[in-house]
Amino acid sequence: MIAATPPSASVALYKNQPHSGAELKDSGAAARPRLKPLMIGNVVVDPPVLQAPMAGYTNYAFRQVVREFGGAGLLATEMVAARSAMWLETVRGEHPDRLWGVREEPRPLAVQMWDNDPENLAQVGKRLAIDFRVSVVDLNFGCPVRQVSEKAHSGSWLLRDPKRVGEIVARVVEACGNVPVTAKIRLGCSMECATGVEVAQCIEEAGAACLTVHGRVASQFFKGHADWDSISKIKKSVSRMPVVGNGDIDSVDSAVRRLRESGVDGIMIAREALSRPWIFSQIAAVLGGEPLPPDPSLDEQREVVLHHYDLVCQRFGVDRGTLLMRKFACTYAQGIPGAREFRSKVSGVRTHKDFIDAIRRFFPSKHLDSDGE
Ligand SMILES: Cc1cc2nc3c(=O)[nH]c(=O)nc-3n(C[C@H](O)[C@H](O)[C@H](O)COP(=O)(O)O)c2cc1C
Image (cartoon, rainbow, N blue to C red; front, side, top):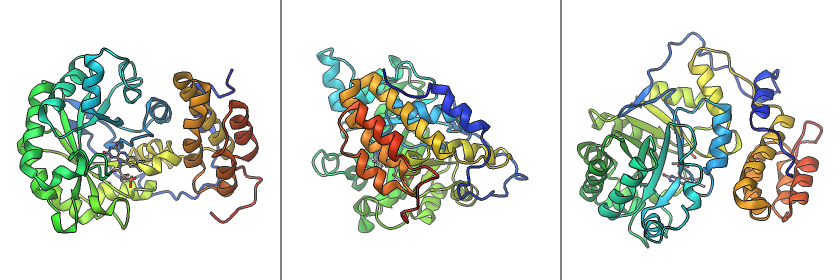
């Protein structure tokens, strides 16, 4: 048996706790009017704050943790390769790990897929829309990773050909019927090929229900800063289609500021949610005019990690679950004093007993001295 907090307990604990001393300032938003929800086709995204797709991370277990804290208007899976999903269909194999939980979990839920072939994407999109009954089918045109971009001429590679992007979107929109189709892009392939505006216009023309823009070009990967001026320009360049801005939102303050100042219809958060999956609930509270809820205490955060571990082991078994959970444990500790020592202990564990032991003994607690991280 895996020792972990039952699903709702960590959240209940969190909600009832006094301020744990985390460095979050009240954004002074209490008096501000509530924002409009974002409409993606007929899907209401309220608040207009979205959990980003992250390959290798935003699996069912992670989404479940985000969902339990609440506050994210729309959750997204990891990206699915349309080609491998088709192969699984033909051999009637088990659905890939990346579709773990998708059938059963609450909505709204977006599933993201990638490919460069409109027919592959249309076929898998239709299956997701009709059989899996997902809320939103999302298309990836932003991935800069070599296997997807250079090798498979998909993801961000397609940004050099706005017309082709439009053709793909139009075909998937046609295949998905009433289920809204969205796209996620970067500002372009490189600084010299910053096609974001043209691509956005082709995507709108093709009938997409929403566009997310990560404010970097693909050649930057994650270097430099997200360029929110360019995100605003793309928003202004389209008329009907809502635009969600994404990049470097790392606090409640920056989330509220981007929403209010950039002109976008919504915001999306990726990396920060890996260490603080409760950030959506904090943003939702502040946008709703409530005081800023505190971060969970470190003891509560440790219970969240154990609960997440429990969910992962239920799917993958204890051996694979333990290996998979090591990277999540490291991201949870990010930014907390004592994280360095914890990471060095947890990243080598191989057994359930050692994982629990590392969490119990080394997950940062108030009693540890700061190591300056
Ligand atoms: C580990 C990791 C995996 C990612 N996987 C995907 C993905 O599958 N699909 C996608 O559209 N973007 C993916 N992204 C990009 C994020 O969705 C997001 O656009 C980017 O991290 C910028 O947002 P942030 O500054 O809030 O992290 C990934 C990012 C990271 C860090």
